[in-house]
Structure formats: C-alpha cells, structure tokens
Length: 129
Image (tube, rainbow, N blue to C red; front, side, top):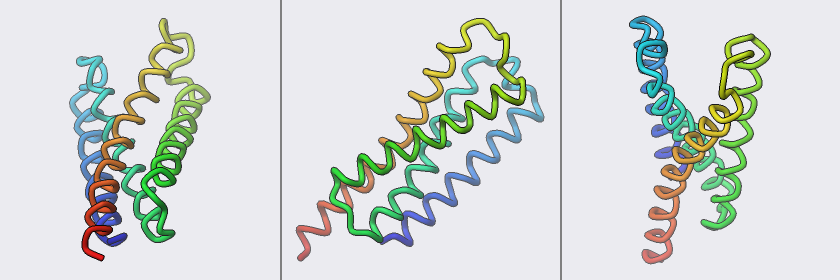
C-alpha cells in the first residue's frame, strides 16, 4: 500500500509543479492573491502522501501517522516560509506574519487530507484480516 501513497505523492507533486509554473508564467501570484492558497494545500497534500507512505511502511497506527504527517508538513512548510523570508520574497510585506500562519494552516489542510486517506485505508486493512 505504501506504493499507492508514493504514486499519490508523485502525482500531487507534479500537479503542484504545474500549478506553480502556471502561476509564475501567467503572473497568477500577482494578479490573484488567493492563488497561494491552493499552492500550499497541494504542497501539504504532497508532503502528507509522502509521510503516509513512510508511516505505512513503519506500520504506524492512525494516531501515530497523524502526528508524523502533521509534524512533517508543518516542519517542511516552516522551512519553505523561512526560505521565502531569507530570499527577500516576503520581507517588508504588510501582514507577513498573518500570511505565514495562513500558509502553514493551508499546508496542514493538505496534510490532513492525506492522513484521511491513510485512516480510511488503515481501517479497511483491519477489517480484511
């Protein structure tokens, strides 16, 4: 089953890359301030599926997987936000801290969606034994 999560992680990473490319190529990030929201949700989903694949290999319970996936998404999302700040993309922007917390919340939503898939498949696995 970890193969399924790996396929979902790669698929959502490709989807994220395509959305990001369109956002840059067509200036969606500048024309549509809300465009950042689906990008962070997709990023959280990608990290969440990757974490779910690792959790499935280690046979984590849904509770353990929840903590693992959530902390992984928040950790990598925080690294991304730090990258944005240190590269000068967000420095001096009004409402920077609110935007950072919103972005981390969006990352978390994507990770929770991935965990939901993990939970559904884990409970089905228990019923088939």
